[in-house]
Image (cartoon, rainbow, N blue to C red; front, top):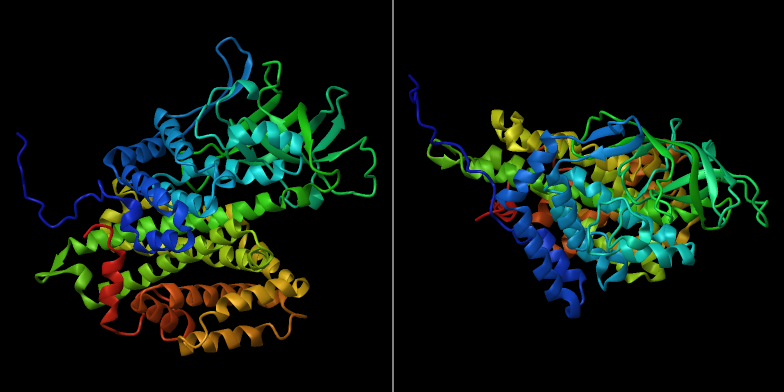
Length: 551
């Protein structure tokens, strides 16, 4: 006979049925700050609608369903014919359809599009990080396609369409389409070492590819961007680098383009997305951009992926911190909320400050893309690799500490925190390995004085507001005085660049308690390496209240 042994009274209710966007004060304030009045109210309304959907029990369940039911590769149909299809749980298509419909692939065509999209992606990634990958990949593909106006005219409208159409059909019959970079090979993904080859097919100016792609985050996308070494080029023999190619999934006559999905990799991260190894053999492809300059053609695509690495990491941090604060606010110790106990409060405040700093930095970089002016482009050249280094590197420690805040519950799959822990390292892979990001920042410093000028101008807007920030700015200048032997200090340099920029943004735009806590702990040395080692101050309570997702 079943019976009740005890009554559970001291557990937090599930964090559902709330507006993920509006409850994130740092994010909502950044959107208001960076959008022009003419589009601000419309954007806020759209983002709030997306936030309510993301916070609903239904969408949270979709996220759990795609995590529990990973994609399955079908290489052959029941009659033995090669098909190379990936079967997804229905919730996967619901998540992608809602994300596409919310404009998460259409930043390039809307006013304030990058800020609106970055905010939306930061919200929607909290539903499931894996489902955000095809959205990010499609968004990132657009600037590469623009290197070939004819291809852009054909592909950009369906790629930026609000319609999600997963059916494999010729592009002209699609209401919406997805595209994905498939750039890395088994060696190291370095464009110099590309071994995939391309030769003219003699048909409609297309090429045939032979080779492979080691990592493709959306193998059933309508198009893949691939690097390959082309033979038979005319007029550009002096360029010896690989070319960029567009590989359509379905050819114009309706037949399937022959490329093989060799396997789906069993990865550390999210379980919902299909990370595939792709083989090319006689695969039809269209060249994009000038011959021999594939890396240059893909430069803005890689930059867009870096920004999404920052946005995605900020999203995971925000979801984790929201869960931690929500949980501890509903737990009591000695008659008081656990969130109000001094040590617990210090940990939560430390996590909240890290999350808010990541959010304001991500939205500032998105605003620079929307602006498009020379100074803003120069700022991005330096700030983007530094920001990606710092934010993607901090995601895993923040998420793991937040999971610990839930105690045993944080280690149960039902809490959703293990999913965040598994996904946390992905940002640094999407944006680029830490060493690559740090070295890129140092190289920009050595060859691009305009980038450093733009950075110093940006952080200089906060001079005089906080002595610790002023000291940190001077410290950056001292650090940059000798770049001859900077490689061994590249990580230190990149981290300081990002921290000072985050501090400047918080001093200018954040509430005093958040800015003060960040500057004390991250710039002033009044904090340890472990979370919760902040200087004692009554303002920590205000920091935690600000981070709480539901009042």
